[in-house]
Image (cartoon, rainbow, N blue to C red; front, side):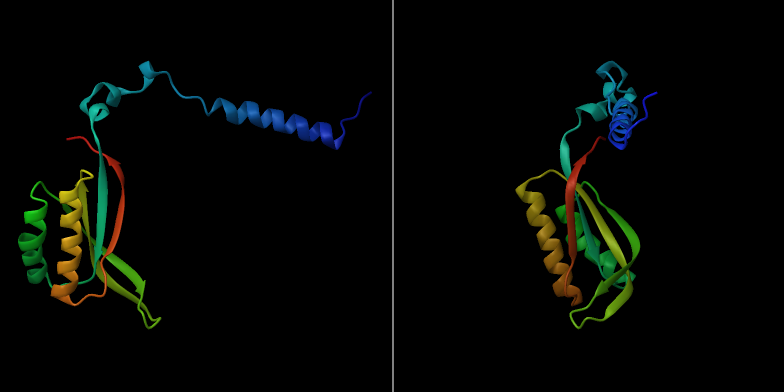
Length: 143
């Protein structure tokens, strides 16, 4: 009778893992890609999603900021999310405060970039905030 050695057990386990996990890595044929493949979303263009994390501002001033600064730069639309944030001040103190996240979906073009940076600059100047965190990532959008 042949007894398995530790090396044979290890090789057997590796082969079993490849068979089991490898089966889950296959991609479906294009004909089985789902209903979105046939719809307009499959033909959408890549855009960018930019999120601007902004500190607290009283609601009347916030509404004015949106109508005077954000809307002229992004008249097609945007989303505002109410959030609770935490950050470390330059002094090292940890602060927790209500905040807002301005979400912009836009093409990767100069006009959008200029608009976003002017929104950040005006917000900091108008409300005396130290910074506006910006996060930009690729997004595929469909309308």
